[in-house]
Structure formats: structure tokens, C-alpha cells
Amino acid sequence: MLVPKNIVRLSKSIVGKEEAIAVSEVIEKDGYLGMGKVVQLFETEIAEYLGVPEEWVACVSSGTAALHLAIEAVTLPEDEVLVQSLTYLASFQAISAAMAIPVPCEVYQKNCLINLEDAFTRITEKTKVIMPVHYASFSGNMEKLYEFAGQNKLRVVEDAAHAFGCTYKKKKIGSFGDIVCFSFDGIKNITSGEGGCVVTSDQKVAQRIRDARLLGVVKDTEKRFSGERSWDFDVHCQGYRYHMSNIFAAIGRVQLQKLESEFAPKRRKFAELYRERLGPLKDIVFLETHLDEVVPHIQPLRIINSKFDMVQSCLKKNGVQTGMHYKPNHLLSYYGGGKVKLPVTEQLYNELLTLPLHPGLAENDVNFICDLMWSVLK
Ligand SMILES: Cc1ncc(COP(=O)(O)O)c(C=O)c1O
Image (cartoon, rainbow, N blue to C red; front, side, top):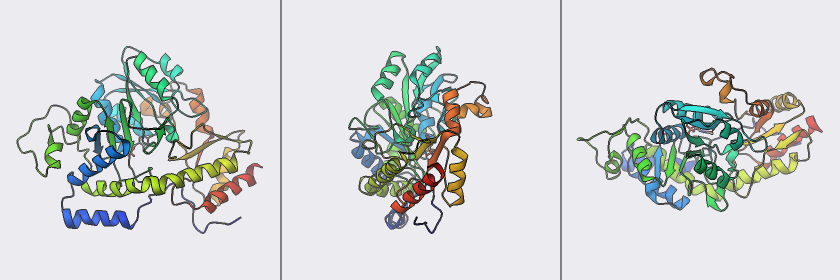
């Protein structure tokens, strides 16, 4: 067993010289650090990458901001949003920040995606939105999801924080659907340092989000992209300081260039290796996915038969970081403190362990982790 010299990290920002040069160009050449032409270029390049018109894309300061603005654009206070409890806290916080009510739903055990049969039982006359989460970058059955939304007259706000670069039936996530929100935080498939974007064909929603990210100032985006400021302006909606800075966009632009050539193949290769090596272990259950369609952001798996603690402590002892995606939100005091029972989600909470996955790993790191797991579980 080849033992890595350093701790094997769960996740890591993979940035280098090119990103540093891009940032210094903004500082030294452009000199304007706020939201300006570099953000506009990043939006155009995201649109080109997804194959959508550039008016569909609005970059913001985080994935959470993207979700918040998207929910606020399509709900009124007290409206209900169906969302899986097994998601990052940001999905729930974005909904409650918009003064809507997150309604925690079950997931399918096989893939940790929102369970539509369970969600159906939670619909009331106040339900206006469903927020599917592309958990571990997988999309599940998007036709079924949109059919469900159509039949129940719901808007769809996709939490695609894990899914930048992924496809569904050869179409890029973000190139179809209602409102799709991505995250570019430090460890995502691409990073802009911090950041995110909303992609939508609904131009009313897109314009509202463009305004709302700049304190609600009407058409301030258009002014800033042409190097001007709005001094005499009007405001039509609640706004926030949620715009992206030129500095962050400069990092994002370089990362976008690296996604297909460098990041995606590495992420897929390591995810495949985990499956190949650990698949035969009877106490391990992998989640359903399509590795040819996803750029896997995280590598969760289920450890069954009460072996979770053994595996986790062995990895920890040997310098391997692990994670847990996620503590279910319905258990948090602010979101009901466990009053609602979601048995599948609660069982998954005891079984899901996330292994290291990022482009900075070496094949040897993954083999080392697999050897350790074999030594505990064989
Ligand atoms: C599922 C999910 N939703 C939302 C977010 C929020 O994105 P950000 O960290 O960019 O605010 C994340 C980020 O970790 C996430 O994993």
C-alpha cells in the first residue's frame, strides 16, 4: 500500500498561475474591481458553453444568492416550496430568506433525489415551486420532474450547485428547464472564488434578477456593463448587494476553460475508480448515477450493516478526510426540529459517507482509500 505523504483532502480549490494572472490583469490593467466588463464576458462565455442566449445568464455573488433571487422572483411571502430535506442548508436558507416556506420532502434512497410521490402528498394551495437538487451532480428523470411541475402548476428552481458541466440526455443542465442556479464556490466543478449564476429563459425573471443583484436599481447592470453608473435611477423591487465582482469573474473565466480539458475527466476518472474498486464490497452501496453525463462534484456512498463508524474512524486515523452530505434540514430547530418524520432521509443520514473527490487527487490517493476500506470491510 503506497501511503500518501500528506492528509488526503475531501475537497480542494484547484487554482493556479493562470487564475493569478487573470486577477492581476483586472487589478493592473482594468483597475475596476466591481461588476463590469469582466463579469459581462464571464456571462457571455457561460452562455456560449451552455448553448443559450447571453440574456439568460446572470452572475451573482454565490449559489445561495442565486437561489434566493430565483425564489424571490417567483413567490410571494408564505408561498410554499417543495424541497428535499437532504440538501445543503443553503437551499433552505435561500427559500426562507425570500420569506417563502421550505416544505421538506423525502428522497429516493437509490439516488438521493427528491421523491415526487412523497412531494405530491405535501402539496397545498400555497405550493408554488419545486426545488429539485442535483445531488452529487445527478439529475434523475428530468422529464418526469417537469411533467410533475406542469401537472401541479409549479415553477421549478433547480438547485444545480453540484451540476455545472453536467448533461441530461446530451443537453447541458441549464440549457433547458425553468430556472437553474449554479454555484461557483471554492470547491465546485468550477470556481470563481465565491460566486454563482442563474440561468433562465424567462426574461421577466432574468431582468428582475439582474436588477435585484444591484440593490434593485432598474437596469444598473446594463449601465455597469457599458462602464457607466446610474446616478438618477428608480427601484421596482427589493434588492441586495449580490452582484459578482470583476476579480471573481476573472477567476471563473479561466476555470471555465479548464473544465472540459482538465477538471471533468479527472473527476470522472476518480469516481469510476471508486466504483470499480469498492463496488464488490457488500457493505457499500453506490448511488445511482450516469458517469458519462455527470461531472461528479462529490463522492458520497452508503455504508450499510452498521459499519459506518469503523470505516470513518479508519480513514480518519490514516489521514483521509471524509464528509457527510448532508445533515437533513428538517432536523434543524429553525426548520421544525424533526417534527416531520422522513424515515428514508433519516436512515441515509446514518449511512452516507463522502469520500475525497477533486482534481488535485492522485490515482494513488484513491487506491490508498480503497485499500483502507477493503482492510476494514473484507
Ligand atoms: C446543494 C447546494 N445548494 C446550494 C449551495 C450554495 O452555494 P454557495 O456556496 O455558492 O452559496 C451549495 C454549495 O455548497 C450546495 O452544495
